[in-house]
Length: 461
Image 1: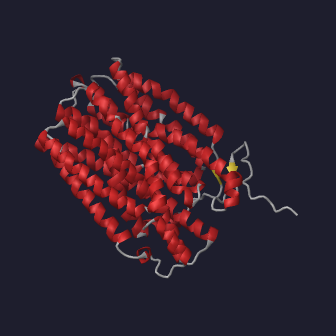
Image 2: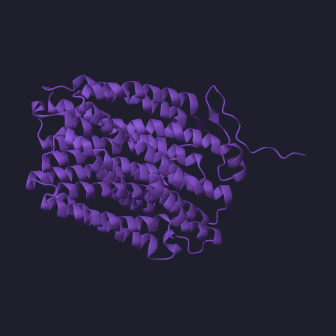
């Protein structure tokens, strides 16, 4: 007698809901689950990618805004800070939207919502518009930052733990690359003497395409349910806030520098918009592309170990930036900044990989086994990701405000880089003290089974 197949049933065309999903079962995964997960990953990346572009479009639009717009450098840093802030805050509700509406359904909605800030910016982008109007429209663009949280929560549910580092790294990296892509498009438009409305006009149809493709090719997982208890448990768990702190150092740096890099080149080094645009995309591009490698390295060698070494390298790169800023050496400054972008991408991958590993290890330490342990890990890691992603993005707010104050006080970004160097040192200390200094008991696993101790290698080794 043939055993019943564990391959997930094809999703119905009416609602595209998958009732059965067990990626930890290798038979299930190999005989159909992986194909479905990869398909959803691809279209999730597409939507998140455009979301990142819309979120960070003001890092590009401010380059178009010359003296005729009447905005000071401090105004521009404040504008980008507020856009970053909204993007961080909306990540929390976006995390839980997946379980309320379904991953596919929410991807359609969240993609379509991007039309609001894009059309609004298209309408007001001209000299004579007040700063308050620009600020209000910029705040609308923050909703693009929420797409990351819902996408990561959705994809986290599709993949088994052994593949999460790669999958989450690819999902986030593909989204992050929306930053350099919109900067590259802006470079081409500026080079062709086009205006900011041309840039916005390009993205309006792309948003529609992303929403339609999500409707056609993505799926909802019936097993993903909102659990207010999980959210409360995640919020009460110290590791959620420790990882939030560490993620500020990686993703907060990435998004903050992405918004600020072009403005720093203009204000501190006197670059024209075209000259700034020639180099601003390089750092975000490399940082985005390398994020999956950070996840893969964390899968192989342990997230905490990779993160620790990465913070050391980030500190070194920042020290070089301080020297280059003081010496007014543009080539050294740009080189060190690009290297720092690359390191933020590596750290994004390694720190986010630590999250499911930590909660899976805690499940095994409680004596849970198999799917029960996997479900516990998914429950808490999914809930914590929204909080961690939101707090991490707040680092971008801090970076832009630090640059604003540094330029107001000293006329350069040197003071801000000194603050960033101290923060990376703190991240190094926390990573070592919490996840590497002691044994597996740091994740409350002193009585764990051999399976649990093996699982801890995802975090500690």
